[in-house]
Amino acid sequence: MTLRNCSHGFVVAVTAVLVGAAVGGVVVMAGPESVVADGRVMQPSTATASVLRPVQPCRLLDGRITPDLGRLDDNTQRIQVAGRCGIPEGAKAAAIGIVAVEVAGAGFVTAWPSGGPRPDASNLNFAPGNTVANSAVVQLGPSGAIDLYASTAATLIVDVTAGFVDAGVEPSAGRFVTIPPIRVIDTRQIGRRGTSEIVLPLPPGVPSDATALAVTVTAVNADEPGFLTAYPAGMGRPEASIVNTDRLNTTRASAMFLPVTPAGFVVYRSMLTDVIVDVGGWFTGESAGPSPDGLFVPQSPSRVWDSRATFDPVQPDGTAERPIVFPGAAAIVANVTALESTKAGFVSVFAAGTGRPEISTLNYRWPKPVAALSITSVSDRGVAVYSFAGAHVLVDVAGWFTGAPLVASEPPASNNFSSEQSEVLLIGDSSFAGIRWLGALNSLQGAIFDNRLESCRRLIGASCRGREGYAPPTVVSELSSVLPGRYSTAVIATGYNDWSGSFPIGLAAVISLTRAKGIDRVVWITYREGVGFVSPSAASNSSSFAANNAVLRSAVASGAYPELILADWHRYTLATPGWLTADGVHLTQSGARAAAEYTSRFLAALERRPCPPAIGGPVSSGGWCDDPDSTGPPD
Image (cartoon, rainbow, N blue to C red; front, top):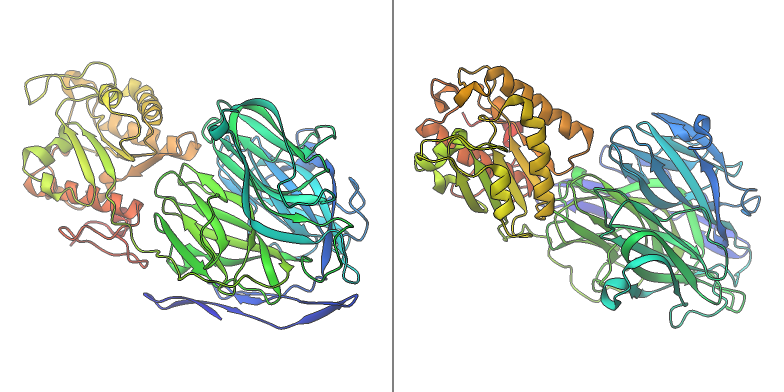
């Protein structure tokens, strides 16, 4: 079968290779050979079928205690798993949790069977200053170990919750039984926001001797950085976590294979937060009858979909289907990553053609990558990925469970460009007020613009008296006046009148207020450098503008402002002096129209919308408006 982008003829082939392996009377397919977007061939799995053997969550590595082992920086560390923490010798795979702390920069972590080549896949993504956790199911190498790689300096913590061992002849215990996702608790609905422990019984229909559940646990709007731990009821709380939050990421989700007892399981909250728990399946105990279904076949992680390569992201409120079908598979275990999102939202992964469940696989607020483990039933059409807000999606498969796929009964859902226009707050000083003065407001297209364009405006402090005959409100004052949740984006085209020494303070104040008002993206127009303009009272000049641009670039690189995106007006205008007056900052008639069209195209590119018909513009390979900073001004 093939994955094809019909609009652009880009093909990703996923060829089913019917390689059978006899395992104690159970025959499983070894899996597909995949030719991915850059032409590399992923080899089929040669692993045998296995069953789950849960253990009390146990720490394999704590890089804070042993930094010589757990502090990685563009290097690989091998960790022995089999024979430790109750994982049997000869285990074929393990369910682990990975936490990255003390992160120095943006990067990712990959786990794979020891001794093999590092795959083009990831299990965890982080930004500077993040503390991030995710679960993974990893095939073990011949010696029972895994290899871990971190692309950027980070300290890693690794916990293990289960091993997978040879299935034998039609086993009873340790097989996975998929169920339609069940939400067992949402503390927002029952007024149980808080800290400490929540004890939850086994869901209805799950037998008392079930050994583990497939759960997704979400922390929602945590008050402060902290973590969630899940563990079997009646047992001591382990030194392990499933979800970690930090100052900038207060809603996060993660899935895991959670050991349980007849009394159920416990979710512990270290911080004040709401919690959602969804269950998507369970593992059998000895009372279950023997069956070849529900056995796990691990493989080294392979990337089966990268929407950046196929130019088909999941659109806002859209659903993309992919024929990810493994012969003899009822469910897949995959790491799902969302990145370059258009605004805050979530992703849900489910069996194609079966109706979208009211659950989320992962949650994101910023366009930075967010990853989560997914245990997903598949249908005869594969899997579907829904996104509340537009996002690119990566899917890395680590194995699958045997059984019959579901039968797709619903037609494919739409994944078309959104027709909804976002509300944008545009706050400018005289550098962009020419859009209003010179009659170019009708060139602001593709969004609902609230234009607050007045001369002599400052970020903070008191504005100066401008062309309008009064001192306009500062950016901070304008932001203070808006209703929370109204705007998805703020465009800041102000700063030429600020004292250069106070610019970093003004930047921090603006970002703080946009967060308070629920504005998830701040587009900052860079300042023109090498110009003759000097602000009133000589507060700033060309050297100040260059220094302020450097502050903006440093702020983006730091990771402290994940919502901040620079629109490089300085570079865009270098070859078009006719757009600017003699001072190099203010707009001419043609420049006013160009500034409005630039802003419109930039926002359309960020949201992956078509260019507004009234102004047009270059189109990307995916059919949305191309980034004007990449294409440059029109000839």
